[in-house]
Image (tube, rainbow, N blue to C red; front, side, top):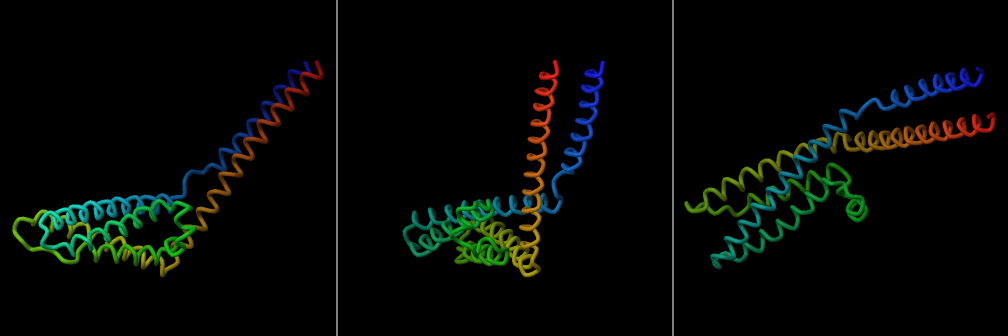
Length: 196
């Protein structure tokens, strides 16, 4: 009888433990969710800039008359690729290019790519679709770059990194707590087995 009460008491103790771990998991930080969404949008705009510059380079090399514009577009593609990779916040990239870790640096890079995408427009009637795409891509990336630059000056990037570190620490604490709960249950089972 005492064993049944002990087992019931053990289950009753496990219940509050589980509720405390679920209480720790309050959900994702809304600020970090907004930052991730903005980063995703910026990466998509960067991919659009890559596509537009590739199309412009192909048309420039195909005509053969404007080789310098084609070379310029190739450089724009490479630098726009860095914009997209910087938005992934891949540790390998930020380790070697520390300036991309800071939002002001990212903003300046994005503004530079937007200017490169918009530069040397060809106003011939046959390329109006390409010019429209260039304008859309460059102004969207320019807007993202300005937001990053202003946010970097206001130290929003520092706040984001601090919140990310806090989220990582909280997730690790939850994992440790769950591991302790599992270990406690195993030890209780061993203790009950020894009593029998």
